Image 1 (tube, helix red, strand yellow):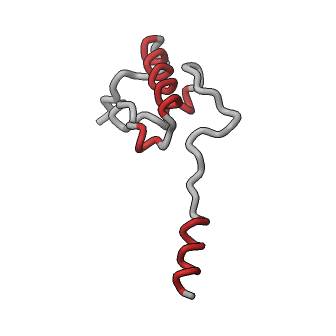
Image 2 (cartoon, rainbow, N blue to C red; image 1 turned 180 degrees about the horizontal axis):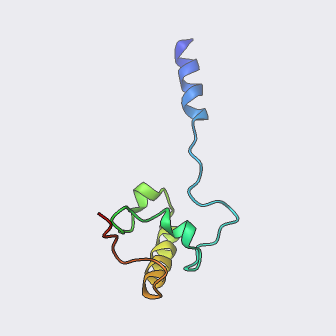
Length: 79
């Protein structure tokens, strides 16, 4: 009986998706892009982001475009 209770607790503990349904991955959406960049300014891996491979590719392209247009820094050198 205890095992049934433990299993139900595990299944109810779902994480929220990293990108909401209304959000579009775009280089102009800086608030969204900053959530997927580390403290040092590196793009986080797909496992850490919990994104699909298609979303990760779009996110990488958007971050790189934002960096070239100086909307995001290439590195974060704050000490």
